[in-house]
Image 1: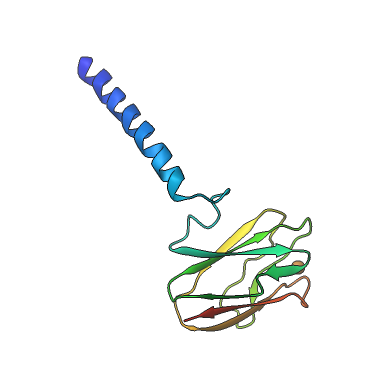
Image 2: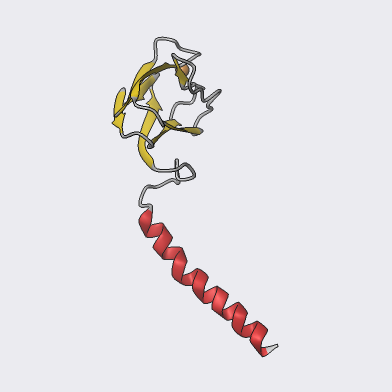
Length: 120
Ligand SMILES: [Cu+2]
């Protein structure tokens, strides 16, 4: 019984120690894109536009898009290599780019909304 209590307290102490450390590594307000490998860049979708319109990343990095608008949008690649599907307000979508190139994308609902990801 004493061993069990000790193990429990040890686990509790480990949790208390690692908790704040993990928080310090991610200073951004929301854990956007942190589930994807090598999150690098966040693009906000706001006022029917992607901001920033063009982002440049390294091969293997990912881009997270967050819909700040009250209306739904999508992040749809011209070459169909990625597609977020419907993104409601505050929804996010992350894509990892494994090949160099210039990827143009648009919103399937508002086709005048355009953005570009340059992967080097
Ligand atoms: Cu849209």
